[in-house]
Amino acid sequence: MNQAGLDFASAARIIAGVDEVGRGPLAGDVVTAAVILDSNKPIIGLNDSKKLSAKNRAALAEEIKEKALCFFIARASVEEIDTLNILQATLLAMTRAVQGLSVQPNFCQIDGNKIPKGLPCPAEAIVKGDGKIAEISAASIIAKVARDQEMIELHERHPNYGFNQHKGYGTAKHLAAIKKYGVIDEHRRSFAPVRNQLNLTS
Image (cartoon, rainbow, N blue to C red):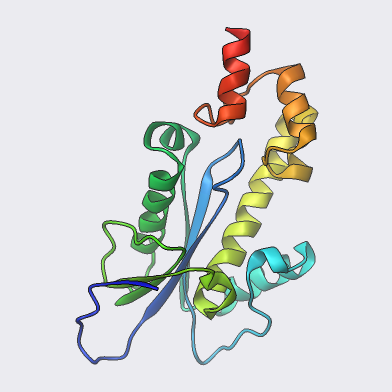
């Protein structure tokens, strides 16, 4: 557990959970979410989004949006990923998610081992926090549902690539489609499989 700036008053903490989805794919934005849950409106079944079925994720995402004190979904673009690198772009998107909350937290719990710069409050990073902390689980779920929907919409514009199935990850089908049909604007040019294909065709 990595902690920073934990010297704060004893007032009741307003905790925001923060998580990201989409660091590994070859295409699309990295999507983050910040969630402040309402203790008076418990949500049953929160967990790491990767451990939930698509049906359960979708249902929980709607419940989170309905019951949470507030939430905000943010992103870093493909261009920002290629310029900054995926880690720095992810941290930037996390900061944007927290800054976008309508209620500002006085403490953040971040999934992973890095604390983003520019947060408005103290924070701790928790490895595998999306399976341990309800607020992070909730952020994981709504970020995952949002990004998956964006990949479905990308599939509708570019059906040859199979984005609705692999969600942008570097599967054999995706790599074969890049080789056959080329690189599109939504591909991350700083990622080796995309960069290598561009080098082959340049």
